[in-house]
Image 1 (tube, rainbow, N blue to C red):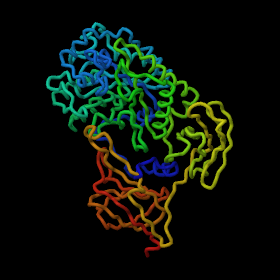
Image 2: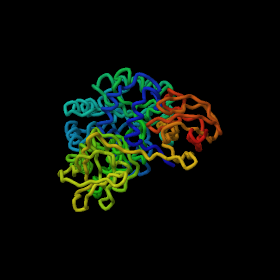
Image 3: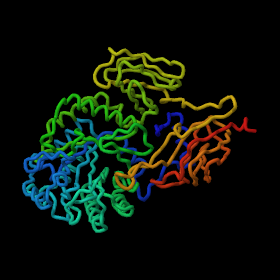
Length: 557
């Protein structure tokens, strides 16, 4: 199946100019929402720090001398399991005197990170900020008596980093909710939803500008998800809400833990990643080996995510005393050392207009194209990009000039393996007018006909529905045809009302197997099927389209 990869630049440019005429992207399910400028600023940051730090850090993945390995260590209360009262008693000794928010900010900056998101409350219900809703918080219940979240927010402002908070919608400290449900899909009572909203108002009112609220877990109702999102946006409209607020109420889609998608996504999105796949919270007995390999692993993930249009947020799990695990700090500094000469190929870039490339990955920015070389033995070819007016090609790290040429429709960069050094070296192309890619448009056969199948369509999906078990749902299919008049016959399973988009116009039609329509395909060569427009996030196509038979109007007369 061909899943949506962002269309090449020529098609993107032409189609983007028509967005005022067609509404082929879902609109938010509630208002207010962050402005386009705010969303763009969030997307430009690309790389951030996640911090899993809380009462669970005091246990370090160990309970009564036993290593608890059946899940993430930050969920040790449920995984061990630990009785609620015994777990809560750990707050009496939780005293993270080695927590240094300015050092955390300095580490993030050394790693090349542009923002930090810290847990304000995890599933265990323990709060890392001063809240009036419960005394089960780090200020009132521990000998530390200081507001971790407040101190980090102030340090981020001093250090020039954007600041966000993680907030778990579920709370095992609440009566009746002190247990794990498969997928952490605990339903929320209306009373608990109101408790969450009250805490959100505290976080949005007393901790300065919040760049994002990273909701997580639970299985709220659509009304509860709406309550959480609107509570955030009414107080700080610029705060980006994560998709794990569920029910399509988020401002950005969240991938699965450590998931790097194999496709482009038609909205803002983020991959959350941990240095260790086994845990996010501190685990005292975690194997910490091959630091160079771990550095390269995270450089690669960062490049993969950014080349596909997303942001990458990489986690650290401080120890119970507040100190950063030296291995994790070394990994972050290693990523930062790579970013120092190569950062311009990451920050503020757009996604690759290509599918899989043998040599590696691509990002695009204004008049620059960046090529990340993973396989130095593979030909460095940008398919169908020969019309790009390249002014120069060079290695980004040391500015060594490189030769380039066109070969048919392709752009070829002439480089030998000995010219490349270090991990994932970057080639920079400077162009006169940006990257130009000719889309591979199918052509009419000798009978003036062609067949377009479902497998050939670019597909766009809704993510972050009602809980983790909710599958992604299809909302848009896009094909490319020769420009001009075409007579189309649809072959479908089922029937329903859709919008047929061609030549920058959307026409609502009733579609069923055998439906015929005559359309005019514009210069963008785009033919789309979407829900009736405008449509809200979460709306899916009402039927499955197997294929289309198209005939040029000239031949069909």
